[in-house]
Image (cartoon, rainbow, N blue to C red; front, side, top):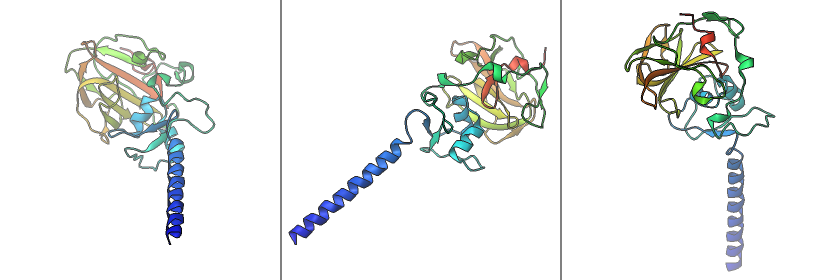
Length: 240
């Protein structure tokens, strides 16, 4: 009887070890470079923005349902099939892409790149442009507009608020608006956010109040992205 008990116990332990090993190996396949673990407050759009990806790429690579709902703890692929890049999940500095591929050919106040609905742009706020666009400098993947603390910030075009929070390092209070399947705009360093995720906005709607850069100066950091890639906003905003 003791022999049978010992054999059964040994077999049970072996099964548990095999099971644990299988789970560990399965988990290991979903961590490290090229993977991202969803945190509370993350949205599909904020993750795509952080790593310079098109949110539609994340949908395809991860078989995300049409409602775009993701859950804390969920592991997301940040690389497409066959890709050899491995740095994207480590730091925002690895945002891929180049200005030559995404810079528009024309300087107009409306654009319909990759979409049938034309986006009609307007300036987000009054003030002096403090810097030029530079794709390879994190703080200059858009433009900074100087102004006064609490100055009104407006939506630059019709769209839907897909992110309103402060979970992306370096952006402070951030709002991201989806204008169509191609264009996103972002408004950072806000003192106060006045719109929530899921709200549909019209061009010119008050969405936030100007806050401070980490150097203390009041300003808005504004970006436009095409299919997840930063482009020079001055190529789109009307001349003034």
